[in-house]
Image (cartoon, rainbow, N blue to C red; front, side):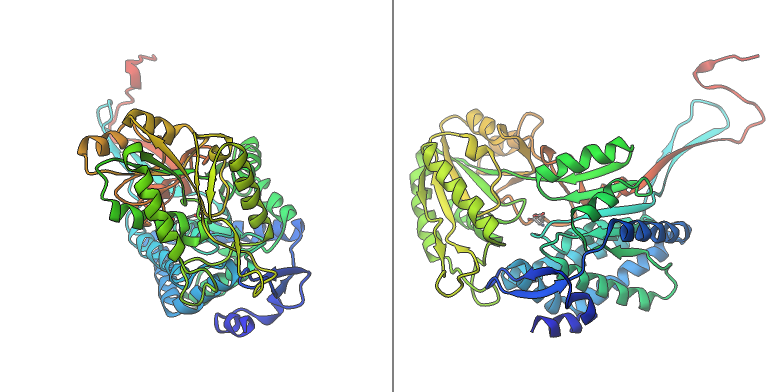
Length: 496
Ligand code: UN1
């Protein structure tokens, strides 16, 4: 069944059949494909091809480069349902979220097309007579993209569309857990390339490989930028390796996202916001809501309402009418169970978190999402567990809530539910939330592509997607031009 879907998406059967690396669906844990893993040598050959493609592509006018991305957006629209379904099969996302992920790809295509007629630099006032200064943005080279299983296609699209309009080539190393959605995305991109006509060969390439292949990409000096999304542990390895060769990196790593729930909050709205952010994608977004910091006066009420809402959440096959699909694999399930055990040890009271549908799916890992009331922000709470666990903490003073929000190693997303404008503004002020994303009356997850996406501290500091994130994919050049007949020196220096 998945074979037919892949073929409709333009993937050649020999690329997903008979390979030594097994691919499983988290829906029932069965093997759905076998892909071949590429060697470090094959990666280096792709880098060489990518570099040649870059040399040609960088001289193509940016709006023409945008045309390729515009066509890619068109192809994605044509195949949205199929690619969304494949995301559901390979990553376990419910249909709505699988489709949402493809929509995120389409949105970033639109954004990048507009950008291709901009890529603005500055003009800067020169202190010297008869001179002008300006700043220009030039293509960078081959961009390496490393992506995670949980957003198997959108994160690649954020990076690739910006990199392409910026005049770069791209090499993508997806998670070993989700090679099929990568093969399909690449096939759709190849379709766009055909319609476009004259793009250089090897402009956007895919590597299906393991750690060895990833290292070959990360360590190669012909790859001036590595954009890596995944765990903090991965970022701790990738960041220094890239820096050691003076490459640049965009790191988008772990989150430990909190919501402050103030006494004035609209609780109906908040409960819906919590549900989507904490339970959606089975807690496997880097923006998932992991900590609820509720004012003591409303904490019990909101926990009661949440437990009722959690009780009604339909768990099961993500392609049917359910809200929570499976965890990715046993490893994710074990990590969740050990976090819950630790939470109990650290004084927590656990609601939910049990395995579900075990009889029907002995090899898949469905869980009821957990709510864990904690006496304080203990070690387990400060750690990101990639599963639907919502820790609940309480506060009395607003400053204490802010402190708790920031007192974790990660700094991706955060939000406050309040109707008090002072609290809302304070939360978003210089001494408020220390995260890359700080929302008011919106949950922590589900950001639009128009804003810069990323966060501080152990989240890695990188920004992808909207706003001026494109600048990271280009090199900046300062140009000073003398159109006078003199040679005045800056800083008033006289040299004769
Ligand atoms: C991720 O989990 O790596 O804001 C990305 C969101 C999505 C992107 C998540 N737009 O939840």
